[in-house]
Image 1 (tube, one colour):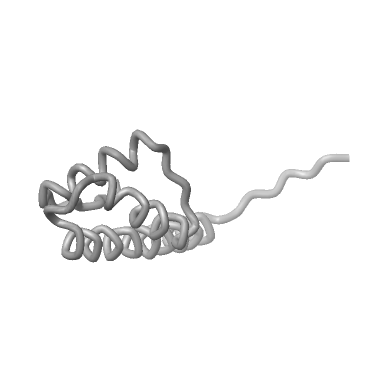
Image 2 (tube, helix red, strand yellow):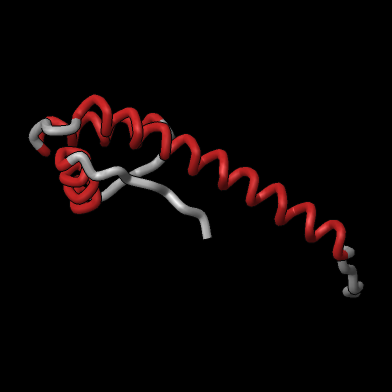
Length: 87
């Protein structure tokens, strides 16, 4: 026997707000990582930056492809500011 159950609009709004808050915290952690790496490694060779970036990315619980590592490391080396934006 199946029964219908629905959550109210307030519950759904609260869930969305909590999820967005969690995403903002994660994005802030990654932004701090990029800012720190940018200060420390600007002008350094990409091959020096890649292991540091991989280590920091892993420390935050993420995984990153070699192509992404190269792209971000190149931007850091060039002194380009990396800014994360949530949509």
